[in-house]
Length: 214
Image (cartoon, rainbow, N blue to C red; front, side, top):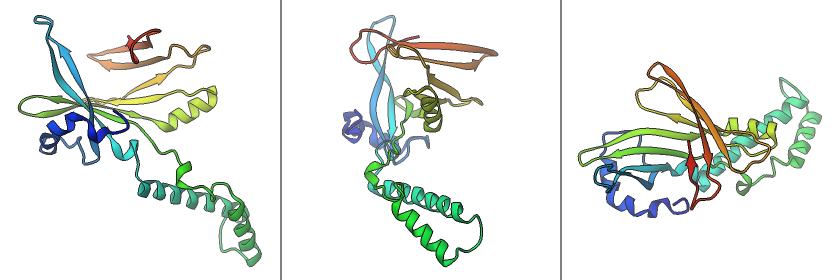
């Protein structure tokens, strides 16, 4: 699913339909990676009603994207080192030599693209009908929040944000810090119909794959 999103069989069936869909959320950098099926309570039959797309440009960035990111990191680091020597104005000859020595020995400046972690998960849900394809929502990884939460707790904690159509609010879903990390627990709250709702999602101890109960 994740390694070869473009090879998912759903792409072959729906790619042309997606390109002409009346939604701008399915961009050229998105591939279908799965489907959602719903069961009819009366007949018991399952029907594929939704499909899931992943933004491949941020999940699997190419070499050019990584090179641009590395260049931006190096540029920012070079400016930081320069300001440590002199905040403003031109550098003297001795100051320039000092900066060159700092740049040559700095670990950030010696980085290569293979050391950059720029992967970020963005999933979008689409309703698939015979007449149209409609965007139903997006869940997106928030790396900045993940970093400071993980550093503060000394544990890897996931943070996601959910955006839904016709909603003025976004919903943050965060993994909670626990003494024992198994099973993982995620909590979030959302505003709907004049009320604030709180939801806890806990992964099952034993399941085939990752199953959660809320």
